[in-house]
Amino acid sequence: MKNNKIENSKLKFFSIINKLKNKDYNEALKELNQLNENENDKVEIIKLKSFIYLQLKDWNKVIYYNEKLIEINENNFETYSAIGVANFNLGNLKKSIKFFENSINNNINFIQGYENLGIVLKRLGDFKKSTEYFSKGLKINSNNVRIKQNLIDNFNYFDSKNIIDSTLCKINSKILELGKLPININDNNELFRLFSKTEEYLSTTDPIIYNETQIFRKNKKNLNCSRHLKIFNDFSVIPRFCFGCFKVQIQMKNVAELIKLYFLFNILDLPNIRKCVVELRKNVNGNYKGYIFTSSISEAKKILENLKSNCDEKKLNYKKVEIKHGCTEYYEKFPEFKLIKKDECLNIYKENWLSIENKFDKENLILEQDRERRFSNTINTFNLSDYLVIKNWLSYAKIIGDESYKYIFDKKLNNIFFKNILDPQINLRNKELL
Image 1 (cartoon, rainbow, N blue to C red):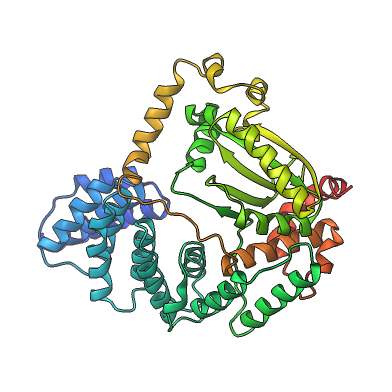
Image 2: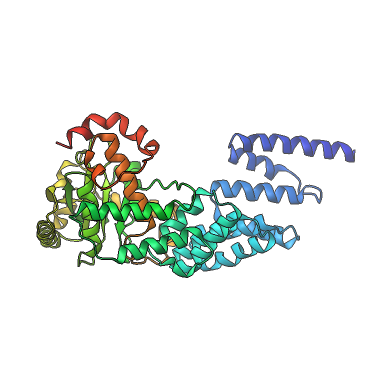
């Protein structure tokens, strides 16, 4: 009789595991709850429930079941890591640190633990410790793309010169020193020499994959654009925040002029968030753009004049400068938003939109995510991250037939990242060069 029970239990787990393979988590959970939690099955049931709740992102239950594993001495690096991940997603950043530390104390080669610690410390604004943990992770696996990208992004906020046991940190420090030297942005030869020297530094390490296309110069304000676009895409609702968002947009003639604008943005005497980008959105005109974010139409008008004056003084070749309201994605569904002023927002903003926003924030733990998070100023100096994005811009230029890149760069460019994105847009992008 006892053997029959064991066989039946095994068959039941087999059914549950098949459901997990098919990502049918709720059905698997129902079957688990029907099992008798005898001593033979207890640990397996708790582990399976922990896994399911991790997939369902029910973070409190992830903590509950992994704490049960610790109580019965089934704790290991994965148990601590799961509790750390759950606390991280609940916004308990400081609390998550000790569990991530325990995960690598239990398994010194657990690379995910170093990545997790790097990410949480980055969110807390401790870029030095974050960089140290990312560097330790890369010692275990130097080809880990996620860790490498996180480390390189840190260079926008932190001078890595004191992290002496990391190749990327050493390279970044050398590039930062280059960036501190005065440069005449109108002299293509100076840009050519700057990029050639940077390539010389990079020749000491393996090729780096860094598929970013925007360079930000940030203050401590959280624009939270990903949240706003997610709400719009899911519910066709323009978030209330966006009604007070005005951007000064400048379109540059070619990639060389975009790079010059980037250097101008580094020294522009403004506290506002700004960015330089190449355009990847289908059917959106303009290839090379800069944005300065403002919170009122009056502020935007002043900055527009300031920017035009600076560009004219530096002899930058731009196509046009204009004020944009919120995101271009909103204009097709709400064409009046393009022209609207902040104090007229109720003409578009519907009664039920606020409840939709609040529900979204509650379900996605938006407030919790930012409770302990610190937003930091960028260092606004040419660094490794910036250079890798600039190389992506140069690849973009090569694909769309913008030959201006040849005056400032003569090394090999990797076009794989942009090819599939740009192939359907090539005619539009080429026309925009005229």
